[in-house]
Length: 458
Image 1 (cartoon, rainbow, N blue to C red):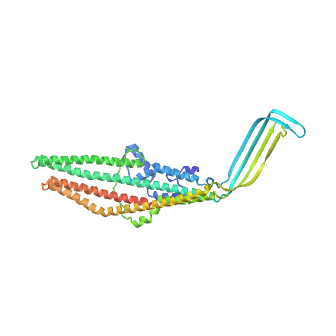
Image 2: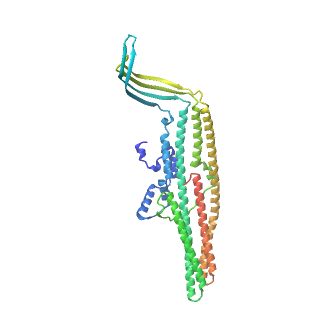
């Protein structure tokens, strides 16, 4: 990898072929600068307002899963070469030098007799050899294509991790908003209960109320205060889950001031038409292609392999005694070698059949992912549509419940309504508030999941 590439931002370090799909995810203005400023704000000031965009930027920068997937992309990019596929020449060099003591006993045809003990000798060899594959049943071509598909598949897995991280952060972010909306409703009920206690105390001072009403009102107020404490716990735990997904300190003090806004323009037909845009389905489809290439690689093992060889050898042998005191040869050579598989117990044939079964399993796995994603998309659209249908009615109910609560409180102050009437109005208001925010959150969660399944999150 070149030095300039190493200096790139790790968040955008992808091969050119995958940049389009990657940029599609982060095309909105979610800059890493905002994430850095947010992290610095927590460190310096102890508390910082967290927006959805900055939360997503922080998650993309800090996610361990994304970092692992990005490393896998880099490893696949390195592996994708003709050298790894076995298509480039292989050059080796060898050299040896050996000193030895030999006992020599020779009778030469001339009648001379040589008999020496511990005769010193030396032998040295050196050589350079290069070989290149000329043919092996197109195995190199199939392997190179498989490495290319593996690189593309690793990029899709990275895209899947990115889109899943964004969806998780969005869902947890809006869960915090939902829990805070519950708290707002509780605060309104507490304010009404406190006002009710104050009214009864005023009436009690002039003899128009009794202690039973005061005690009951105070008990109701205390119960709401306890409920508020529990709701604060739910908010803190929701924030902790969000901070964990952002890979920040789980006890960081963050402030979220947002509301749930649902995109009401989604159509089931558009969702179903884009279901194949999911990185999970794309990666599964690539796995089928990869397994087919493995079939070709396995089948190629049954074909002959032809290599071209060339090199240069040097040999030198010297001894202190014997018929030949010095022998030295050196020079280049060139040739070809042919390997023909004749019989190996049908191993290659059986491997090819296993590879075909794996290809069929990969195709079935792709069908399963398509089936499950389609089913999830339909179920989420059903939840999305039903929530939207009830949302407008519930907004009207919430407004009416608030008006009813204000009216009953005025009537109670004028001694026209009873304490039970106020309590019933408070419960109606609280239930309407809970239903409204739950429906908004359900619609938003379904929207996020559908956009995740269709690779449309922005």
